[in-house]
Image (cartoon, rainbow, N blue to C red; front, side, top):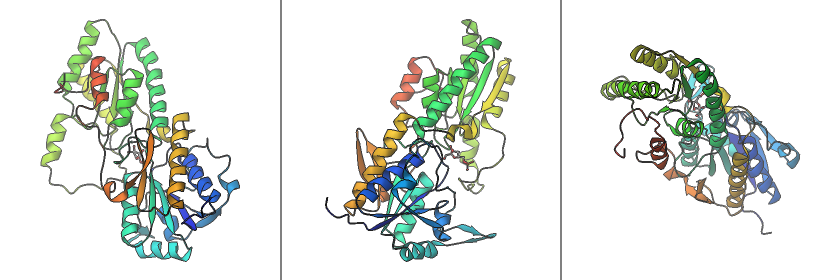
Length: 367
Ligand code: F6P
């Protein structure tokens, strides 16, 4: 085997965790170690790099973790250029770069979602070689057909919808189920279709409450006495979407979680008032991010991780490993960082949902 062009890598996991992270770390580390590359694990995302909290990883450290949920390296939402250092927000980019150099890291491998892609790009601009993998249950990273974590989370949300069906049906109720996804509707749409939800509300299609209520009433009229409404956490009404467009208030930090009323609770209240039917709501929350990855995610993580190993051996940096069709490819990081992949209008999943008479919150052009 030819000598790897990369002598040493640092691996970190950043942003919200998801099933499959350990499988991906294992894939990268085993492939790199097998090619003679030294592997350093960095704890708790970019914060660990700034604080120089690192550990050498050997084969035994990444064995037996394929099926484990979460990330054994720990994760955080900290960004090097805006880090809370004991109550003071500071730009720690130079420290992050210096620590990578001090540890002789030739390339920093960052496993994360959109925030991580941006932070990795910033470190690249500050002088580091980076390589990223697209991790998020939200499936909203550009440059790849799918992110890892999405399939596992979709399976959990689908099972939840299945369980809600039996109780909704017994009590002849409508149940609103809130599904994560940040500003994208992939998870609610995928789980909604797989679970046979009667209504699916996404951030990409601001909903018309009257349209939704008419659909629920029509179901009752046809003696379908229960309904499941799958809502993405970012679902918004047409009226609120209009207000938001006109609002002049500064944009909130997208990564900050605020304890506002859950979307499912708000929509359940709106439906109960407008339709006069009994409604309950459930917010799945972090249950969707926990536990063991599905077989599909284990395979994807191992494929993406080992592809990263191959790229490192060839000295190819500043790219993200993406899946295009059946193939893992290197996508220039500059094409990914700062982009968000939401559900495009006319996407085949939307058409699929419409064809099985699922209400998508409003009349769509293709209907
Ligand atoms: O990006 C993954 C995600 O789970 C989103 O779906 C959700 O909006 C967010 O993270 C929740 O973040 P946190 O774990 O910081 O509350």
